[in-house]
Amino acid sequence: MFTPSVTHPIGDFVRKLVPDAMGYVTPYLPQSVLEYIPAANSVVAFLINAVICIIAVCIVAIGNAPILIYMERKVCAHVQCRLGPMRLGWHGTIQTIADVLKMLFKEVYAPKGADKFIFYLAPMVVLIAPFLVLTLIPFDKNMVIANVPVGIPFIIAVNGFGILGILLGGWSSNNKYSLLGSLRSGAQMISYEISFAMILLFVVMVSGETNLLSITQGQEGTILDWWIFKIPVLGFIAFVLFFISSTAELNRAPFDIAEAEQELTGGYHTEYNGTAFAMFYLAEYINLVTTSSLATTCFLGGFYPPLIGVEAVDSVLMMVPGFVWFFAKVYFMIWCYMMVRWTFVRPRVDQLMDFEWKFLLPVNLVLLGLGGAYIVLFG
Image (tube, rainbow, N blue to C red; front, side, top):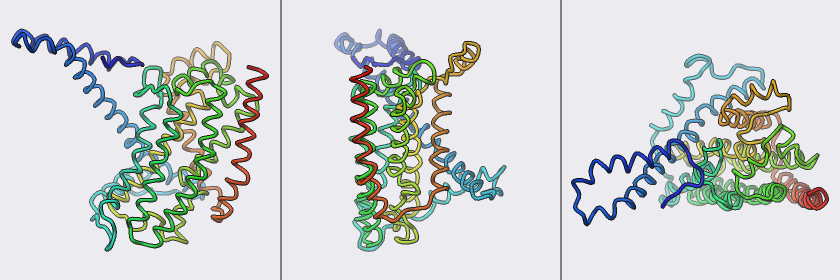
C-alpha cells in the first residue's frame, strides 16, 4: 500500500521507522486492533512523507523567491550601469527581507464594491499551478515527489489556473483598469499557452515519453545527448521558441502587457496591497523557477552533468551531485529571463498578439511537422 514509484532515502527511512516505533506499542493493544496495524503503518508513513514533500516544495518555491528578487534588482542595475540596493546589509542583501516584512505587515483591504471572496481567492488560485508543477520536476534521480506517467499533459492542464486567477483578480476588483488589464493578460496568456503546449508536445514526440523523469533519463550522456542538441537544429529552434513563449506565459517584459504600468496603472493587481499583492508577486517568481526547471528538464539534460566526452574532465564533473547541476542550470535560465526583461522594449498589444498568431504559431506547426519527419527518417 502506498508504494512509491521513485524511492528516496528519507522516504525509505520513514517507512521503516513507523513500523519499528509501533512495535513498542503493539504489546499493549487489544487483539481486535492489531489486525489493522499493518495498514495503519502504511497510512501513517505515507502521511509523514507527504508532509515532508510539502515542506520540500515550499522550501524550493518560497525559499528561492527572496534570492530571485535580490538577483533581479542586481541584474537590472548592472544592465543599466548602476549598483542597485546597497545600504541594507552587504550590497543590499537585507533589502529584500525588509520589503517582504513591509508587505506582510501592511493593511490588507478590498476596494468598495469588490467581490471580497473572489478578490482574496484570486492570489491563491494563481499560486496553485507553480506548486503543482514543482511536484513533478525531477531534481535528481531519487528527488521527485510525484512521478506521474502523464507529466507533460498534466502541466499543460494546470497552467490554466494562472490565467483563471488573473482574470478573477481583475474582475473582482471593481476597477475598469484592473478589468482591462486582466482581459489583456488573459488573451495574451491563452494565446501563448498554445505555442507553449505545442513545444512541450514536440519534446514528447521526439523523446517518446510524457513522464518528466523518463524525458530526463533520455538525455543521459554528453552534452550532445541533451534534447537541445540531440536533434540537429530543430532542438535549438524548439528551445528558442520555448524561451519566447514561456516569457509571455510568465508575463515578464517585453511581454508584460498584463501590467503595463504606464497605460493601466498596474493592470490586474492595481487594487491589491499587502499580503494579497505579495502573493501575486510571489507567484511570478515561483513561476520563474518552475518554467526554468521545465526548460532544464526538457532541453538541458536535467540533473545530468555537462559531460564533454573527455574522461579526465567528465570524472570530475560526475563527482558533483545531480541536484547541484540541476539548480545551476535553473539559475542560468533565470539569468537569461532577467537579461531579456531588462534588454528589450515592450511591444504594443496588437504587435504582441500578431507575433503569436502570425509568426510563433505557424513556426511551431512547421516544427512539429519537421520533428515528425525526423523521427520517421532517422528513428
